[in-house]
Length: 311
Image (cartoon, rainbow, N blue to C red):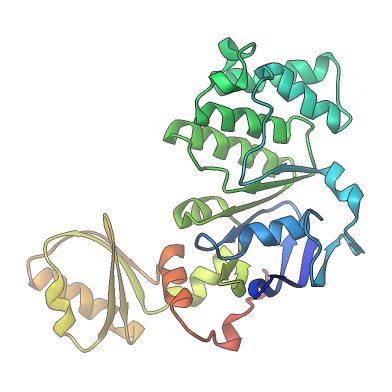
């Protein structure tokens, strides 16, 4: 069952078509990723979902009814452009945002202090926001986003400016909300985070929806004929083999596409025969980044790629 549906949203700013007929559905109790490069139209789409921008056409449906202003009270929204009152103190800010959502009292304050402790900000609870680093300001805004225990959490580029430890902490909090059957929607241009966290994704490029569906189905659909390889040695000689369609390098791993799944064993044999130390060889495996590069590079997207049904 879908908790939220985006139907044929479009938005232009002058001659710029920021979002062009975008549709996708967010299943209940899921982590949903709205992914794409910077400037793809993700933030504009989110702002229409939040009723900040009115769409030129299309609508957002919440559990069967068109979204209205009351939707904002059910949502914890972290915008891409952070907005904090820098003269306010840390704890004061969190409690202020909780009160805006109708939550106050000792229970909320206790929860705020618990989050500050998790993010190692307890000693800064009485500091002014202007005295915090950019990363710590972002932690405060994230806490302010979730302090009222919303049913929907919408995060626009939430990992920006955070170090690996705090990224991992934020990830754990997101997954905890998922266990409690909340709906989490976040936008990002960082494909590895989306791949690790998301159950479902919608991929946008140049304002258009490229593809949407469950991560499981997408990887199954596009992983055919693909091998994920980690090895030691130069594999450039593979370009001389007719069964190798493409080689993509991703830092510590390599994606290889063959023209027939039956060539997988032949590829492994060729690597070994040429003295390549194979450390990982996963057939029918493809990363979200590889899928994005394959699809976003096309001038026209095949109609059969526009939608993959949810499982």
